[in-house]
Amino acid sequence: MDEIIIKEIQEKYDTPAYVFDINVLRDRIGYLKEKLTDRIELCYAIKANAFVVKEIEDIIDRFEVCSPGEYRICEEKKIDPKKILISGVYKTPKVIKEMINTTKEMNCYTIESMEQFELLKDIKSDIIIPVMIRITSGSQFGVNEEEAIQIIANRNEYKNLYIKGIQYFSGTQKNSIKRPSKEIEYLDDFIKRMKQEYDFEVDELEYGGGFPIHYFVDSNFDEEAFLNDFVDLINNMEYKGRIILELGRSIVASCGYYLTRVVDKKKNKGQNYAIVDGGMNHIVYYGQSMAMKIPICEIYPKKDNYDESWNLCGSLCTTNDILVKQFPAGDLQIGDILIFKNTGAYCMTEGISLFLSRDLPYIFKVYDNHRLELVRENVPTYRVNM
Image (tube, rainbow, N blue to C red; front, top):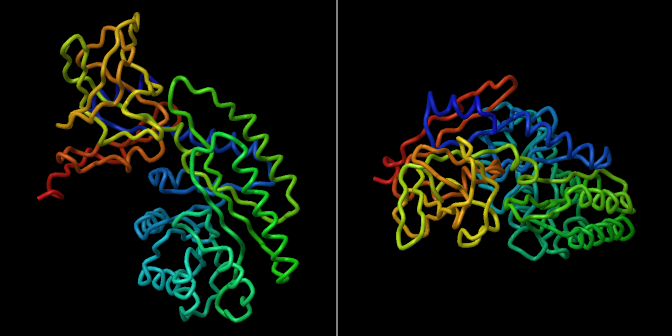
């Protein structure tokens, strides 16, 4: 991470803090678009990081929104409604009706259940409502294939709905191409059957890829080979309509840094412990198990050697608040800053932020020429807990 930025945060503000590098984010999207070719468009799931939506609106084809709060963020940021897909297992009826009756440019909505289908079907509106049928992969999300077919077979009865296509998502961190291969094959076959049996043309297929981000130093994932294989899967489909790849973590993780400062250190029963001003309430790594895996992390100032290992512990009063065990940090000192990388996705929202009434961290964005922008001050949470 840029030393100029670290010094500015250190001198003007404090830690803990999240920093999102917008140039890294835009470069990441550019790389994905180049590798995925013009055949595949990109949808960004804003639950991964809602702070950066405006900075990427011009280079993202669609935004997936899964709650009224996320929709309000898009409204405040003036995101084009035509780019918004309203998804999620629970769509608040009052909010959905308000969206449909007040939005001049129509959003698109997923059908996640027959209850949601009835809700959308029965809304009185002068505008035809675009919908995507989400087919379940075997979780709480989506409708069964039989229910999807029922909706498609009777589509001419729904005068206020336009069924644009199919959505499918089955999870995150798919390290092997085998699972996407089976899913794409299934979807291709389903689309073909709908054309043959019901004369239904799927205008769009949105696929939640769940592409992986590797957070730990021992990972050996070959992303370029994975992306090449995925493009081959798409090119070999019989379906030649619009393909939209929905990603969150894979798009935004690499732009994020979490900064936390060493505030105390000790040796207990032969083990080195460093206490930091952040903790597990601020940082969550997918796949981290009992703090045994070592995430990609730098120390500022840099050390001459990293021979000595430390257990990095947060400021919460629980023995579970261990960020990393046996982290090679050398001669770690009070005041040193630990910079955890690949924290652009979920970390700022998935942690147990209200536990012990600790403040929420600062949030910054970094732009060209080392320009640091304060997005959010550190926020006291104690009032929420009284």
